[in-house]
Image (cartoon, rainbow, N blue to C red; front, side, top):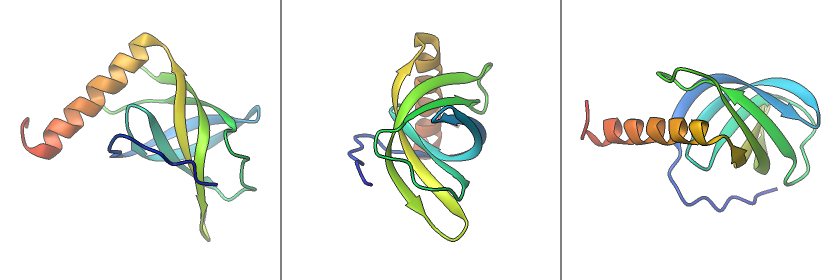
Length: 116
């Protein structure tokens, strides 16, 4: 499955999260993020069908509270160790959207050298 039509740059991120896929909780590691979605590595499993609904709970470095978001799978990968899922955000509280936007803006500025 590859429905990857991203319009923004993903930023590197390593944070543990809880994903709720097909009503089952699973732990994962977010490896990149943008305002529109993120990529998660989990333990090997059977692939999810395209556009599988996913609930997410994660915390961004330097942010005061956890972010809750709804999303859907948009691509996946598999290797000998991990199953990777690209998740496109479909719904998020306004406060959490602002937190995510502020985090991405801060990281992009730091990476470009405009803001130390």
